[in-house]
Every structure is written in structure tokens, then in C-alpha cells.
Image 1 (cartoon, rainbow, N blue to C red):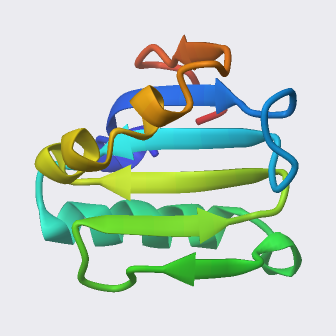
Image 2 (image 1 turned 30 degrees about the horizontal axis):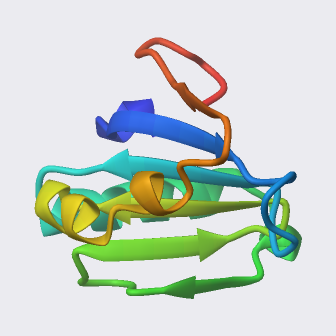
Length: 104
């Protein structure tokens, strides 16, 4: 995701507050083409057998990729603010991912 310049990456650990997934990975993109590029890059790098579904693809201000154990949310900044997933899931522990983390 860093290669496609995903911004403000936050990981929410939902395993104690939800049963449908263990983590939300939330990031921002600066344009619709960048949202699409991030989603495509993640889909290329992760095994297809673990990909359970996607919503909002290819041209949306919010794309969601479901991999079972985690769900990736890619937002335009104003859409991220409007839906406020970090606010809704405020009871979940969170971690901001710093730039340069090779695992992201």
C-alpha cells in the first residue's frame, strides 16, 4: 500500500468487539484513481483464495476488500471522515502504521 502512497493507515483490532473479522485496515487516497490503484495492488499481492469479496470497485470514494481475518477500507479523505469508522469502532485498540513499514 505504501508503494501506491496510501495515507493515514490505521489498524483497528476488532477481535474483542466484533465477530465478523479480526482487523480493519483503514487508509486514505487522494483521488479516485489512487483508490483503485491501492485496491488493485493489494489484490495482486495477496492470495486470491483468501479474498472473500469487494465493494465499491472500481470507481468509488470507498473501496472495501474482505479477506476474512481482516477487511481493508480505502477512502477518499472526505468519505473517511463522513463514515467515521475509527469513531464507530472507538472501543477497539488501534495502531497508526508509520511510513516505511515493509509489511503494509
